[in-house]
Image (tube, rainbow, N blue to C red; front, side, top):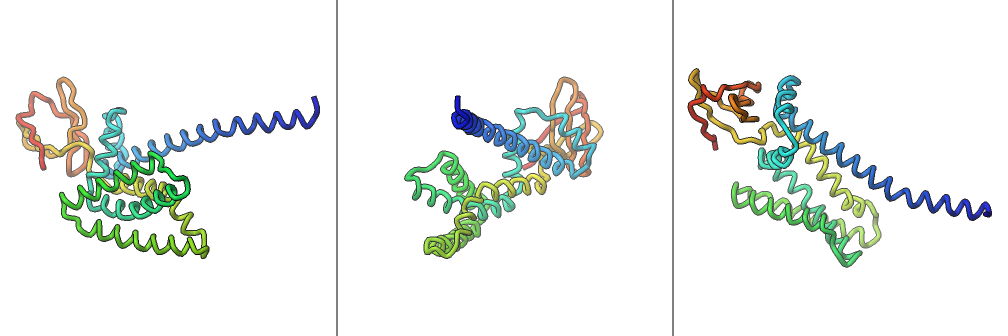
Length: 234
């Protein structure tokens, strides 16, 4: 076997290993992002109290993950609207340029645009946030003008900006998770024999209910035998 042949096989083996290594690194980064998101969300809900955060984390399981994500988005609708307004123009531009280059669209890009469209419709019709579509139209026009500038060969910075859509969305998601202190459970008005407690039910087990109180934020264990009624607060 010649040296050139051995070197060729070695290079081929390295190339075969690279896709697997890239996938592993991508999975690791995604896992780390999920953990960071949940950690920030728990700390925000606990008002950054270490011991309260530990109690909240102890009551969670993997089935709560979807509720945590949705609770972050729905907890502060106006803050979510700002994030949607920032991401939507970049997502639309990214989808447009990808389709123009490859004559097809990826599922991820289509789902992102569909989600943003649904969010805009819901926020506008339900809460009357009329500045959201206006802001998106304004920012999209700016992005469109920058696109023309890039097409004329002025710079490739704009194209790189389009490719940052995922990064912008990720940063905004982390920001929301750290700022939104509304728990993912519904707020309840709990009438006890000793008085009334306003809070969020974290866990219900035979004999007691674990509740995160509204103010001050602390976790309490309530005996079910002492609970007279529970009413959801709109």
